[in-house]
Length: 450
Ligand code: ADP
Ligand code: ASP
Ligand code: MG
Image 1: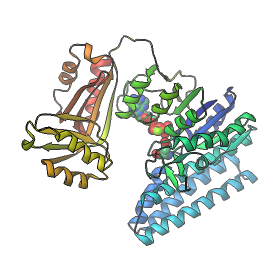
Image 2: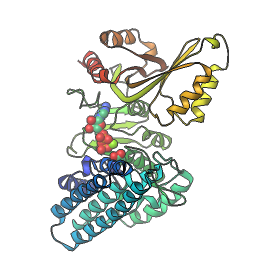
Image 3: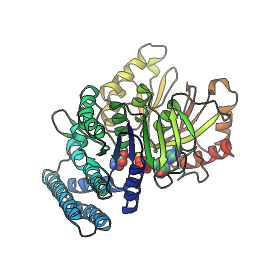
Image 4: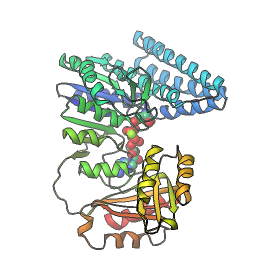
């Protein structure tokens, strides 16, 4: 069993969709499942329509909807001409967009956009794109079956970033997909979306189609999970920031997780976790350059010469500084602070402490006001916005001299807001102003990779 996930650009045009179907046809593995994203830009358009509706600008919302409609209509007409298949697809798409119009109207009349409604809206793009690609495969003579992921991807009801419910979804995934692949069919389904046990639509969080693919791969015990995207693999830095970034041919599960977590957008941060548990290799490949080797991510990789493997940046970070002179020599201070983050369901990324102060970073500001109010009971709280975490991921940092020296010497001209080093043997992370992040990444990449 092979799970192939195709991202937004990989299904973003008629040509790209043709290529996806060709790659599916070339798969020789018995049992192939394709997990598809929405066409590039569509999830953003769906969400911006909902935001316009919330501001009671229904015209703007409906004009987003019409742009979404014309993108899909154009794609269908290019691929299928004026055929019965085209007719059928256009009708299906229009029916889904009619539902979207009802959702937008509801949001605008009520002046309320719950996370639950937003999930119902933002997941529509995957349903649209996957229908077109499955029909294209069928037209090319492939035994294609379209399956609605909400039948089997059962999650909790943390709308906006729902968590998989393994005990429910594993048997359901088996039941929905295995009989089809056993009968020699190629399954086309959606990434990103799921459903609660009681049938409400959920999403796994932005960029979550990678995570869907790994969940499906694990549920079906796949031999490999392939993430097909628009770059040649996981690279030494984001190629949009560093023009001479290089592909990393092999990475360990741990390295890939750290990189994904600290900003390498090519992989959703949660993708690797399920794969590790079943030891399923994950490969990152370029849809438009399938002859390239890509990156193979697996449990153990051969030792390589380089100490530094990649540089990444994660933007949109908020730092919280808590100063509490009262806490001098008192125990239990950290425990109290952590309990507050726990209570407000906010994950901490980096942390650095001294006797009387704590600095930490978060990327989810949803509950920031409440967090800050509760923290204020324990000390003076200061918040800094618009920051970025820059991370250098490598090997055996604790055993090597001079890495931190080289890193910070390279960044002499950049203000470092906070440093968190030594927690992991393979990662050195620090915080800078968001505006400095790309420059920091470029300078570090030049220092370590030239
Ligand atoms: P998809 O729609 O296929 O899921 P994404 O846009 O989510 O694609 O992820 C691919 C993008 O990730 C690339 O175009 C690249 O700009 C960005 N990226 C960031 N860091 C890295 C990295 N270290 N290696 C490769 N790509 C990266
Ligand atoms: N379409 C979703 C997003 O844009 C999920 C994905 O592409 O991974 O976030
Ligand atoms: Mg992605």
